[in-house]
Image (cartoon, rainbow, N blue to C red):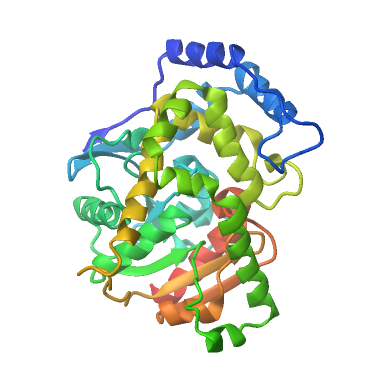
Length: 385
């Protein structure tokens, strides 16, 4: 394992600003707002802020406050933060981001999770944190070979935790990170103490009897799933079928990369007008800038292609995975784009032992509602630790 420090050459930051200034703007139809994508007036203002006001060096210093390393696992460079708690008996916990997220999602929760004593919490609820960047994302990318699906990433995480000397540990994730955390529990149950997720996909079986049992709240959540499939999943269909074509635009145009990500933060967070109602603007831009500076807009999209390949193999020898026997905790944030349905979740994951419903917060829980996120992670692992 090699120590790692983020130190972006100044010429790459200068190039970013020059590219933003040289953007060719497409124009837009009048009066459509956000209904057809990111409005040009909003994006122009945000891009100009990115070019003239946003301070990457400040973000770089904030990230570099935490010990970082790289190692090679299964042929891929893995970048990770490793933040040990001052409490010697703290529980090791691997936190996994999703798309279009990064390790920057967790900056506001690292302190409270590793050092609860300093934040007015119970020192017995402390964690040693491992925060890896998924292969193909951020400083773990770009990937150089195919096949990095959720199961393979989970296998890399199991090896990473072994190399760090952690033989009993927890896993937490949201979005793609939730899928990886669940896979980690599936493939390494002898070492994974518990799995906490703030996203859980629940799909009805199509059985009329199951649908008849859904209450009003369940039906509202099912309607969100249908809206996502019909209106909001275009990005997913493109990334899961033609990620290489998309990669050229995202790698060449910073404003294209910005729009591709900021649209998701507007649609998936607990906001009514602009994503900055839910997420700090500079933190949002740090996330986007990581994708831009590492050139991983395209390689991160390939993660969706690999997941779709898994679905295409349904019916084969590996189509029925072994059940997850590790205890699972679920945090449901009320404005998430895909809130789970409890009765379906229990059908698919009989080991759910913890379920919390929050009124506020969206898809990026650690960014939007850090206090609730920290509290629920502590509460779950208190029951299984």
